Image (cartoon, rainbow, N blue to C red; front, top):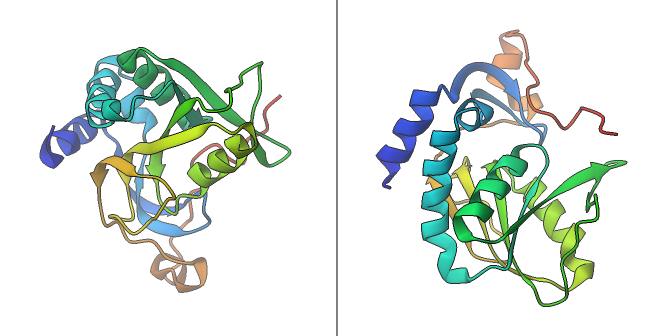
Amino acid sequence: MNKEEVQAVLQQAGVYKHGHFQFTSGLHSDIYLEKFQVMQYPKYTEILCKEMAQRTKHLEPDVVIGPAVGGIILAYELGRQLGRRALFTERVEGKMQLRRGFSVAPGERVLLVEDIVTTGGSAREVLEAIAPLKAQVVGITCLVDRSDGQVQFPVDFYPLLSMDIKSWDPKECPMCKQGVPLVIPGSRHLQYI
């Protein structure tokens, strides 16, 4: 799939939202990508994860891991496409970790999958969580890289779509200065049992 085809799937699903949003990173933007709009449609998720699999199969992962909540569906479908196990990490007391009996063995090849990358913080948290397990992270993939290639990781990065979507520190945010009401979407503030 080329950039336009990926964008068409996202647009058709209603992913692009306009307003005044705060991301997980704390940054503000006038555009929010609501990934669950696309993930509610198994056919779209299958199409996008099939493309992710095509772009990353050469990495020969043993397991696919995504951060909860957005990475769960993507890890599952990408794992299915690659014929590999699919795990997810969760935050426990603010720290990302594998739970529910999930584990990776030393040397296992891990492909990390994210939904939307803005600063790369969630992906780095997953890398940190699995580092003590001595697995080999072979790459990171995502639906959309909002930084348009500015985010750097210690492994190769394979976004389906790179976009330059502006974001601001709250002190610099033009919508805050205009008094536009702030929306805090996402799930990081939710408590999990």
